[in-house]
Image (cartoon, rainbow, N blue to C red):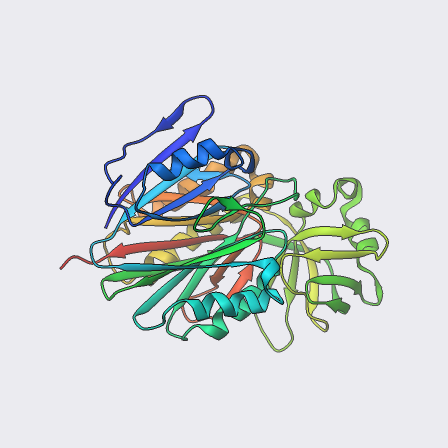
Length: 380
């Protein structure tokens, strides 16, 4: 496997080599929504690797190496030696539900020899939990799944996802990886602290939360946010919700996407089942950075090879970026410390992360985590 990276910023233009221009089979493109809305800039990005499939999305921040940027474009090209790839795309408007979209994506990928699926989804119009449920239902249990939901900074207006053409709103894309030589590792960790009382979800519908302990959810949420309540939904990224599902020991973390003053409800990136136990969370700086390091270590360990991976895709939640601020690059550098200097790092800050919480666990939607997916192609 050969990997190279090019990076565009408004001030410096393109930086990086194009040695794989004709040979790259895949290019992963992450960029700010404003940058990706410039058609000529996107076309120039695609022309750099004319033979490559493109997958990627708009972001809440781009990762290139150990740097974190806003409204730039990062293009990471890969030439595989023995791995084949296939893509599948669906439009949200042409599916009955997010679950149906996931099933359509999974059904569109040939399963023979399929090793891993990497998915990028619209971040505003998709229920991430249902998307993952649909995909896992359609894919063999032996196939691993990672990815994330596109971002739009803290604006929550619209997100863009690459399909076979230009990046568009309301799309979901997946790349299937095939071959015996490819090793894929993954890990996902958080690092937030819980506070306040635990409350039962007494009324919800899919990813919309109406009541906690029989009281309006938005009213209670604002009470604990205090002065931060005026900035909702953006300030909700600083105070995610920990959700413990019935009959399970682990917790999921959910991020707010929207609020409804009339209904006094909160809409999250993933489902909030009735009967589950919810508790507010807040940041712990050192634990957030340790969580990124833990995700990298889990990804390194699960790849099953002592050598460093050639590529790592980092997907971290926009809420972590808003909390860490000038320390945001610390969590990326902690990944570098684990994976080593030979691994090319790319990624983005997202509205949701898709990954198993451990190599033996089922794939799920997460919020407020750092997710690391690593790739290594074995030599003959």
